[in-house]
Image (cartoon, rainbow, N blue to C red; front, side):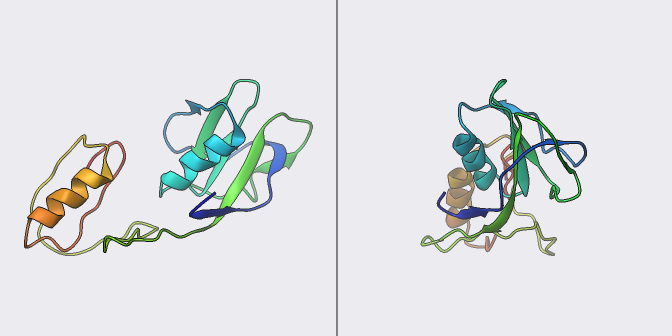
Length: 135
């Protein structure tokens, strides 16, 4: 998948770890991986081929995986890189930065919208974005 490299895929049950939001339906393991790659806070995911539920994780799974007979797939994100020809780049994990908040656009699910708002404001030199909270 473009932008992400995943570690070994395990067929195992995950017994602990932090979920990242609600599980969502995806038809394939590859679609689940794409979703994880898109979400910057995702560092691992699990997917069940029977239920088609993909669960993103905000913690790595090394100590949470129990090798046992299971239909679940599980993997960690090993690296993430995003080309930014428009001058923006992703910073992961999130950072705290000092500065003046110029505006807030809650609920906007498009990072492109936030880039446009920042481009239009001459004082804007960065922004933070979350898929559910906006920018």
